[in-house]
Image 1: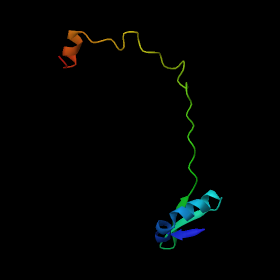
Image 2 (image 1 turned 90 degrees about the vertical axis):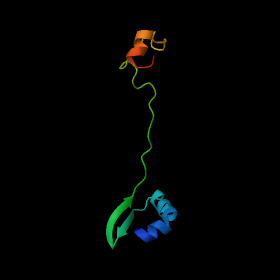
Image 3 (image 1 turned 180 degrees about the vertical axis):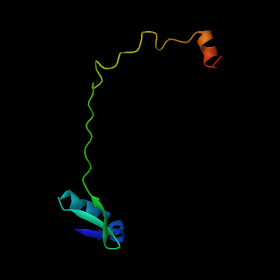
Length: 76
């Protein structure tokens, strides 16, 4: 299936439905192919993928900074 840019703007929902049915949808500009609608790839989230690769933060990571450290950061 081909559609001009103007037709694609007007009928985008229908073109997406056609693509989802497996039809090849090409958008043309001045009669020449300019783009093609393709299904988006689903992203998979892998929990724990960094396990064993990144060390946990030190125990004092969230501890308040002392006065010297605060001065170094310009916060005191």
